[in-house]
Image (tube, rainbow, N blue to C red; front, side, top):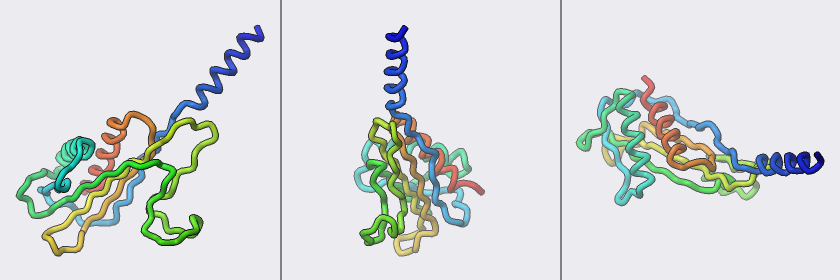
Length: 167
């Protein structure tokens, strides 16, 4: 009987240490005028496979929101994506004290029984018309996860495209 109790306790502790990090998508989308009916998508000179797959899902979701992607559309959406450890933060502030830094993306604190290295997946869409125009749209979405990256990138693309196509 005592063996069964110890085995159950060992299995319970091991289960607590399994990775279960999957945060809701956090969005930063300032008020904006609605997107036009057609946009062009800019992924940079040499987009990697992850950004290309992300852009495909993002494009499908834009279409569901009534926005088509065409190469000749004057309104351009530049799409970027990054993945980094979620324990790192993002800031443009040069401050050295983490308590006073103006975080764009605050570092995540690791949970007590967490036994995985979660990543922060972050996507930014910048919309503009012409080369010298100030961007009328800067939308950001991010999530922390150590689950299957493909499914999490899909969730991120759906949330970001959905946020900027709300009319």
